[in-house]
Length: 322
Image 1: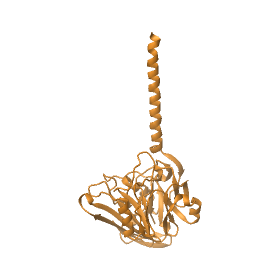
Image 2: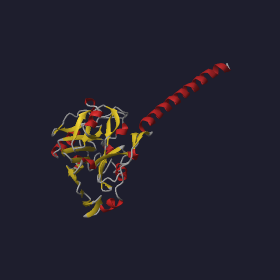
Image 3: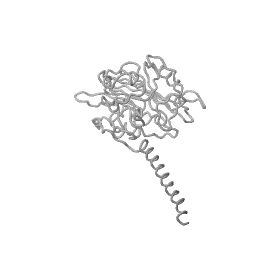
Image 4: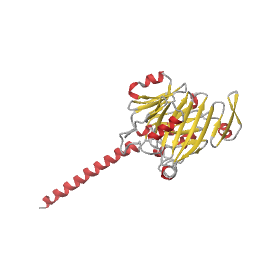
């Protein structure tokens, strides 16, 4: 009789043990996929600019030595000019009430595309390695920066940064920046990473969609999905946005849109694409948005990230530096 009673209890214990182990395995799998850092490569940080440069750049009319020459730098809260870089940022507010949109446009003209760089959080490439855009920018002496494609959230895409190939898993429409200051979107499966590097590609981003091609805004954005990861949803509705466009070689336009806030509902992809066309971009591309959308300039965040004005950690940035 006693032996008979023990059997159901034993089965219950075995069942509970299996259930606990299964749940534990699932939780660990999710943590491993979305929380635990996986460092695949350590990247050497760019040589630090002279400390005097960072100090003098914040005051108008400062002369900064660069080798045997001196560059006159003028700047204020919304602009920066040197002999190599010209940045002008404008805050734009349109509409009212529930239709109000607040966005920031950075017009960036460079003498050489070498001043347009990218950086990883903590100087490490891999999954779930994140830091705030402002922290990555400050660590790399950036004058201007904004978040990139958050490559670390996914395992596919073609990722070339500062001329080095880090990931080669073609999956979607990508963006390529070239040494000659041009920029174009492309389908990752149509051209190899090796060919891109031979053509002079310095950086690629894997997010999308393409917003403008050959001067015309796209309007094919129904149910756009970038990832198939847990919790993914379509991104075509009004949201915070980050995007990059090119007007002519070495003349870029960067846009960050605030969203999910009382003073800004965000933009739909159709609105975002049309904005880039109106700004004169010949090509434009959508980068990671939502809570990631952050624009940094001269030591401060100029927009209001997320719905509380707090930055969200990201895996990478695109930035301008002397």
